[in-house]
Image (cartoon, rainbow, N blue to C red; front, side, top):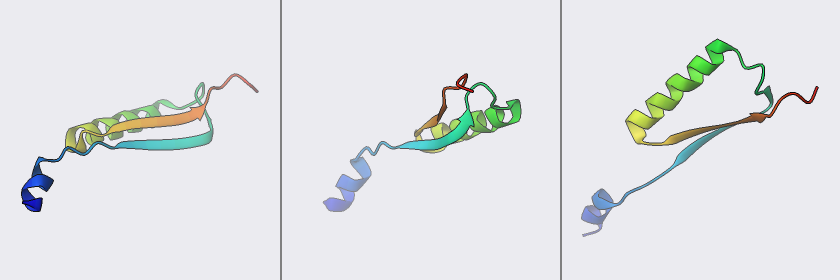
Length: 60
């Protein structure tokens, strides 16, 4: 019975990437492409969301 319940359970999770020294205004195109690819892979394989947290920028 527990085995059947495990297969029917819905698990949600989110991946958070925190880069406090990164600046939202100056993230390079290759890094943005890598993040987009990672987001797509996570979404397709695990249905997880990717959340990236960086500095807002413009405070220098």
